[in-house]
Image (tube, rainbow, N blue to C red):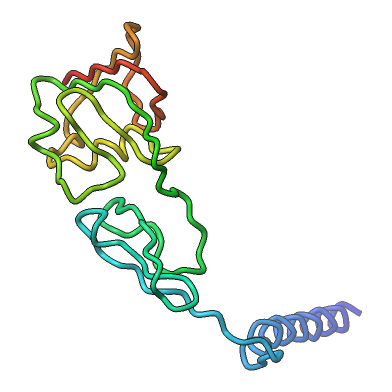
Length: 171
């Protein structure tokens, strides 16, 4: 009686394993008439100017794409546009511990423009970290403190500046 239960358990286990193997391998071999969707390869960049795409019917409409963490945020014309370029910028004041943000910035970055302490962001939703990555200064090893509109706040890179903000960062 015990041997027959063990035998049944072994047979059921083997059948289950065969079903698992078949379930994961057979769909890979079948092509249900759908075209395979290939993704565009990531593009390495150092500034926004290197990320432009040519889209439209005749591939003659330039589309601005931001560079973030040395990769273009969008690599093909069919993908979602997370940060559309806006003609009217969000403007705020940013001071960072005796740094000239304008001198450290790359003029090829069109989404964020530094002019003295004034920052113009030509898209919605850029975080403070995405804005600061556009200057050539390594903040990763610095302990940052922030003052936002006169109130002390812990520096958090995910803060999204608002129109008219006055942000002071110290390290």
